[in-house]
Image (cartoon, rainbow, N blue to C red; front, top):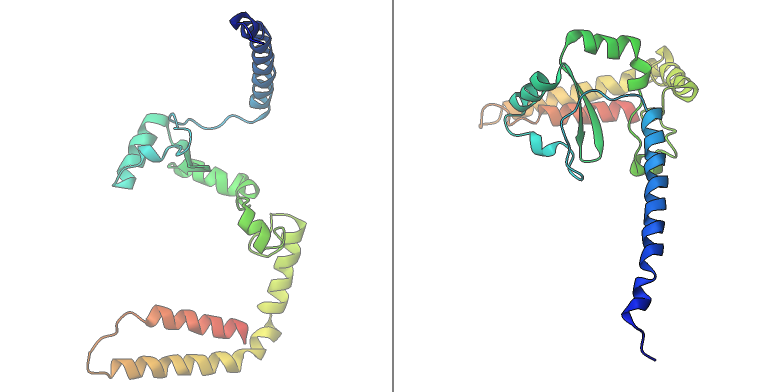
Length: 196
């Protein structure tokens, strides 16, 4: 049995009606969501996947200065999927970090941070709130408290003495001058003092 071309054309109006209804529903939902969100600061046009990365050219400070001169002292940029707020005036910085500091206190959510921090339960990744305050109280009293510092005083003294011995041994070598290992030694010193 052979189908005629008119048979396929009979589904075309149904397809058009379905597409029109879906577009209206999705467009209305977007319009409603757009009015629920607070307005964003001014922003140049972004590309779909890379966002505003195409606008940033070396030197970075000059390209940001050009964008800020066009759009004002507060600028909203997207670097890929990561939204960023660029502030250039002292008044805007003061308002963000004094009046609205709780809004900016949280870190962005990510799947890896969710997995490695057990649903944001660590001190570093916890959102600003009651859990963060409890973790901060615990760390101040148990890790950086006077008793904890007295317990680790001997370890700190030994590690500082070992660091000074290593630096003295390296400086007395024939090469003269260090090769930039001080930063590595200081990091090791901090880790040993924290985890002993």
